[in-house]
Image (cartoon, rainbow, N blue to C red; front, side):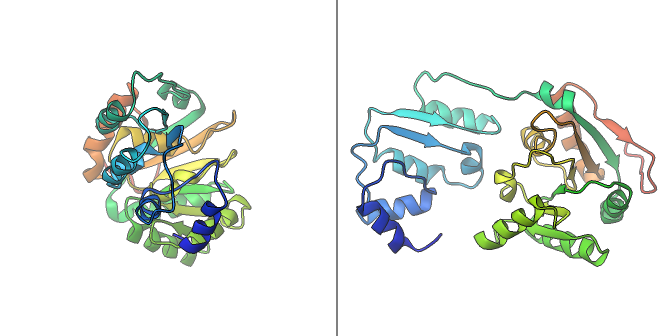
Length: 270
C-alpha cells in the first residue's frame, strides 16, 4: 500500500527475499519489475485469510508465473475444508506440522460463556472491565463499524480504548498496537483480520464480544492469551443469535464451555 516507486528502486538493486501482498506483487509482475525465473521457494503465510478475503485467484495467477520446480510452504492458523482443498492444489505430498492443538488451549486458558442479550453486551463488558484489573484486554468484534462504536462507548466510560480494523491506515493500526503493548491503551477492539499480527506474551484477557463464524477462528482468537507459558482468560458473550455457533464450538472442543450465570445481565438460553 505504500509508494510503488520506492519498491521498484529496491527491486532493481537485487533482492534475495521478497515479502508482498498478492495485489501489489501482481502489479509489479505485470509492469515487468520482477523476474520470477529464479525463485526457489514460495511461502504462503496466513493462507486462511487469503481464502476468506478472496485473494486465491490472485495467488493462483502468481503461482502460474513461478518455476515449476520449487519448494512450497503454507502457513495457516485454521484448517477449514477450503484451506485443505487449496493446499492440495498447490502442495505436492506435503509434510504437515502442527505447533498447537485444541488441548493446549483447554489446559492454559480458562474459558467462560456469558449468556446475554445483544442490547446488554456493552453494559456487561463495561462491568467486567470495571471489576477486573487486567492491564490489557483484547476484544473481538465481527464488524468494523461495531468495533468503532464500541471503542467510542468505552472511551465515554473513561476506559482508554482504541479500535483496529481494515479501514484504518497502517500508521493508525501500528500506533494503536504500540499503545496497547505499552499499556497506554487498556482495551483494543479488533476485527479478526486486523488482529492477525497481534502477538503479546502476557495478554491476560480476551473477550469475544461477538462469537466468530467458525470454531477454528474461536481457537485462534482465544490463543492470543495464555501464551509463552502464561495462563489466560477468555470470556465469550452469547446472545440468542449466537446459540448455533456456540454449539459448533463446543462440539469442536469436545466439551462444554463453562457458563457464567453470576452477572446482572444473564438470560436463559437453554
